[in-house]
Amino acid sequence: MIAVLVALALLALAPAAQAAVLTPEDAAELANALADATAVQGVCYGWRIHVSDPTGAEEGLEAGSSFGPGDPLDRTRPECRDGMFAELVGSVVYTRESSEAEDSAAWDVESNLRDPPTIAEVDELGYSSDDLLGDDNDLAIVNAAGALPQLAADHGNARPVPFAPAGRDPGTSGEPTGDPGSDLLRERGTLLALCALMILGGAAWLWVLRRDARRPPRRRRTTTAP
Image (cartoon, rainbow, N blue to C red):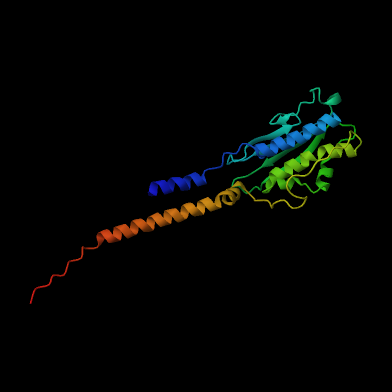
């Protein structure tokens, strides 16, 4: 019984196996929106965010493009008229709890358009690279990358295309969580609390059984006939 409870607790403490920041559904939705923009404008779009996480929770490359989630932007494709492209690029660095360094994030826009979108314009829309360290880091990527087609159109590079920001308005994203350890408590706090209660309950149950086992058996009273 105790061994099972301990195993559940260790399972809750193990890092979540997450290879990307975006869920497959969100990545596909963003890629489809960028593909629609490419079909109208002839400009290819994408996102490429390198994540360094010592816990392994989000370690790796979060990337996608007009050609699909996980497909890097390739401006040599025929869909990219004259090789035109715009891509959101960035990095996220998480640190261990024992480190004095703080988590950090940065992003920029790479483009060969005649009058390209700038990261300052992305920030003016209310999307900050600091959001990459918060609960809504996925929305930060979706909204910032999804804004590139409209910004390209605003600069006269292409026809305007509609895009609806994902999930919430600018400026309402989550607060930075600090480090991966706090993310673990946030995401699995309920499970950890349940495991702790189960372990305490199991220990109390064993204590009661042992206490009862140590008690001497009660003697039956005998009565004698008058």
